[in-house]
Amino acid sequence: MSPRSIESGQNSTTVRAGADDVDFVLAPAGTLRFRFLEARTGSPLAAAGFYPGWKRPWYEVHIPTGLVDLRATEASPGTYRPTLLDGVRLDASEPQQVELVMAAACVARLRLAPGQPPFPEGHMLFLIEADLWDTVHYDPEERVLGRRLR
Image (cartoon, rainbow, N blue to C red; front, side, top):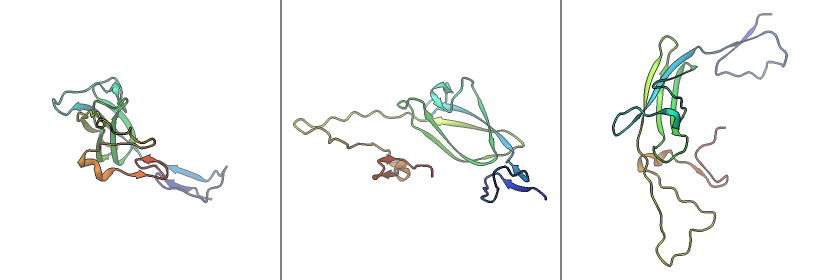
């Protein structure tokens, strides 16, 4: 019996536990080199405070080739906005180098007018920049802001 191949990104419900006639063919790994830059000055940022983050000027990860979408977020949000970089193509033949430009976040303090009742219990207020509004999703049944992986 010749082996059945399951390519990276596919799944099979016909393989039984303990089968010995299955080959798993994984996509070759591509190398992604990246660093964080401060948007206003262009200066490199120490990545220890970001996710993903390391303590070197350029950081390197090996992940499956193809198109990837990257998101960089502070480990303790407050100074920089999350940065999204969509459609980075990774190729196994040469490293892809990207710079994640981190723009400053804004801090806002809300005070209700004198004599107003406190903010209602169980309510939340989100201040969302206009250019990000179309990416926001709120599920009122689960009380979840953002998209869940399914």
